Image (cartoon, rainbow, N blue to C red; front, side, top):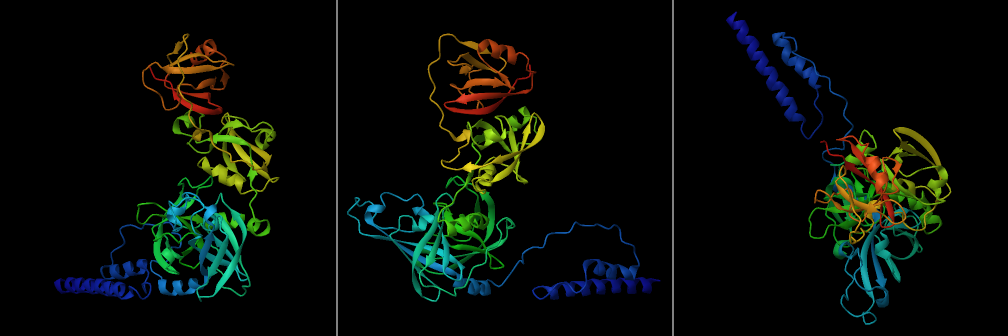
Amino acid sequence: MIQAVSYRSRASVLALLSMAALSLGGCGQQAHATPPSTQAAAVAAPDAAPPVSTVTLPPAPAPAPATFDVAALSERVRPMVVNITTTHESAGREGLDPFEFFFGPHGGRGVPRGQRPPQTALGTGFIIDPSGYVVTNEHVIHDASGVRVRLADEREFEADVVGRDPKLDLALLRLKGASGLPVAPLGSSEQLRVGEHVLAVGNPFGLGHTVTLGIVSAKARAIGAGPYDDFIQTDASINPGNSGGPLFNWRGEVVGINTAIRAGANGIGFAIPVDALKDVLPQLREKGYVERGKLGLLFQPITRDLAAALKLDAPRGALVAEIEPGGAAARAGIKPGDVIVDVNGVPIHHAEELRRNVARHAPGSEIKVTVVRAEKRHEIMAKLDALQDEEGDAAKRPRPTQGARPDRQQSAEKLGIQVSDAAGGGVRVDGFASGSARQEIQVGDVILEVNGTPVKDVASLSATIAKLKDGSVALLKVRRGKVVQFAAVPVPAR
């Protein structure tokens, strides 16, 4: 018996060593020859011991390879990328370009207007059509009097600006006399995952066709560059001159257009998602500009307090603060206080997504807007107007200056505020009974409604707030300057 036990022990050890050898031998060559479940059975067989437990794991999405041939990918995509040099007349560029810190040197800074020589600037682009259509950033060719493009094979072409979209910072060029050019395939930024490898190719500091490797650090970044901020953040090295260049995934598809870097920071660059380019590309090519639909409303983000006051299960969507008279939203029946949670089947998780979603649709098109009103969902069809001026949300408007307190002042103790009758109706907030200002409301705000009940004067406000339950959240409709918005004010538990 002792010998039999010893033999089985040696067999178990040998089986384990064999499995380890198989695992080590497969590294860098191919997957394990034996599936993990089969290996476990092979080890357990000599002792004939049943497995302790079986764990079933959910199927994982197919990942990008941990390693891939960067050199082969670089060689393949290099002919698709172009270097751009633009010329600017001295009178056309005064002061600093807001994108200049990540675009390229212009020279002549600090020289009075009219005395500077013509300036040149550098950028990058990529070919999307064999006949010579090239995509780049709008700020690369902004106010340019001449655009010249150099290919990877050193050929050079003069280029015409076919279309531009300053709001997305995109431009479309056409190379004069070009044909049969290699095309960069457009991928999907929606399917791009954080942590996925990406390759940036560009013309930093005039060093053409420079390749840098990194990963996707984050998605949906807002950096204050425009009304439709939705950037891909990457740690692939991006420098002045990279603007307009492609960000490739490991399959060699363009997933972003490199646009910005963070001044003073290393490893933080931003790219426009390629899906945004695909939305506007047909208009840039056919019309030279982009027309966007307009819903005609002001909205604000939903905080946790607002979600509680509106009886929402989560702080998601966009809260309608004000409706443009006679606009698309007004005609469709959308009302202040509605929470827009979906547009054409696309969920609105964050308020800013509403602006981008509506802007994807052309004027005159109909969209289905899903709103939550009084805890019920409603589907509303709205026919969009043409966007002339940018829609702004109520939360970003300038705050009014605090005026002097009027003599006749009363306290709304339940809300912890000092109030007085406002000219034209409503109640003006003059101060805070507790002595500390609230973030939700400010001195100078005019309260128009409380939980949907109109407020005409201090007396009506007092009657309304007397009905509020301790520990609840009151939804106030307030006018701040010329802007109407909502505020959620907790009612203290006493």
